[in-house]
Image (cartoon, rainbow over all chains, first blue to last red; front, side, top):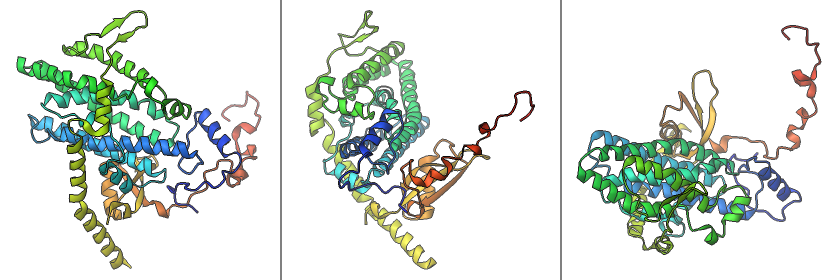
Length: 323
Length: 95
């Protein structure tokens, strides 16, 4: 008898055949499930990736939360609130998936607020005007969808299943963003300028969301062999650009890249090189909002402690009165 | 007390009348009632269900994960349990 989510922790002398079995399941496009044997490095890679993903969803509520009380209509407030709730939900699906690997959520939260685990660099940029909300939905969630759709086929079952749910919901996020921008583009000259300004600020950081170029992404090869990852960073970045350019044209804005041009030969858009030193700076904590994001997360965690305690105390009292 | 002392629950949703409850994921909650409310907020934000079950993970007894486990062996060699095991002439109707 074993609790459903208990993970294998110790692997003293892996019994013969387990590694072969693992490789065979992955090669056959089947899924690895929580209590299956898996290599330590596979487990560690997944914990790191899922935790970073979960943290990104949770921190991702902040830039949008900035506009919750100031969205221009009740309709826009309700939509934005629903989106922020989804991000919280996505974070929780992902923490639950990480827990099947033998870590617990409290530990991951602690690692986030002490800076030992990362979240997506994109959320370290500020949301300066309301058009940013639309651009985040269109570009940031659009880039996230490019990254996440292949993760629905990830070799680790609980992560893949969480991604299926998340991808369904992200589609709403992207479409609401694009619709918001279309509405602004039909508005005044000033509103169109807001959209262009937001696009100018978010375009390059969105391209950086796919991570460093393939040549500088040492973990990609192993992750692809394990079928955690299905495409390289550069492949996904290209796919995103190809998807986005016609949408930008339809919207009537200019993507801030003078090198952007159609390449007939390879049937894709050529585009400029993102400033990788900027990505490195933001990842290392020197982005515009890194400190603010973590401070806010820590404050929310600490200020919510009494609620968690009260709920636990109430549950304990009820349990004792039932005995 | 931090939230990791809250027990883990498994969540099951019945998507429509006439269908079984299906496992959709898990969550932590301080008690059964809160688990149910959290499950509603987490797993049915878009009318995904008409009924919810939550059960403490620790209360579930599970078989071991190994599919070649002897546990499932008894059914392995009983092909005669399947309808395709039996040869019936093609001109016999409705069988």
